[in-house]
Length: 108
Length: 122
Image 1 (cartoon, each protein chain N blue to C red):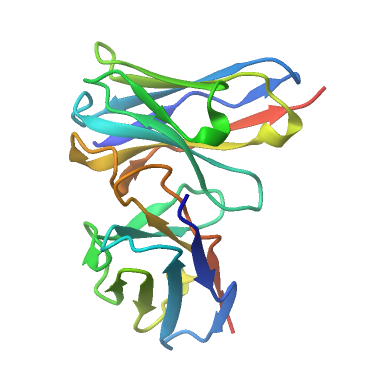
Image 2 (cartoon, each protein chain N blue to C red):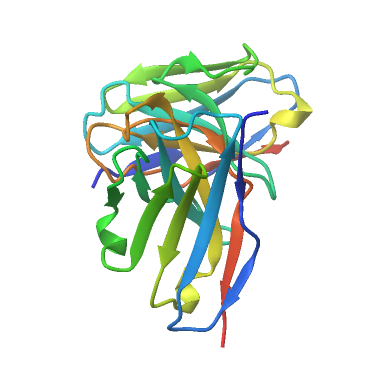
């Protein structure tokens, strides 16, 4: 089973600032990585798939990069609605598809 | 409108089983994978298993093998997840989620159900 490790666990950022979230896979997953945003009492929302492609209706301030084992989600200028928990997930070849433990982006 | 609508919250006794449904509307159902993901309160996301309805065979995480059964009824566009031998550790929110591409189980999840809270308590 592939282990996904996210860092940091919590990121304190001021509105308007840039946020950089990291995700590392325990083995090569190519570009088979997704990022999700989850707010309290809501299901996750797909932000990025294929490591770098924004999902439908996702603002351009969200961008993804990386391949292989190291990935990054960048939020260029944090808006109030962006404070949430973010998860990465691999979907490379064989299950189980595993998620990182999450990064909470909180207001500084 | 594209959505997955899940059945309501359940309270179960230890040792019993629960069956959660996930009905698709406004989306093509039979050729897209439906996965089940659970989230223990305050914790992260865990993929349990999935199915491509037109193929009819569930694929399960080893941790849940023998305890979980995922099925789909293409005539009603509904997927089901049944979990047996429940314990307090199964208390969680259970989500269904759809894979993005036709015919692929290995995929990101672009549509999610609203979640079904299952509480296991004596």
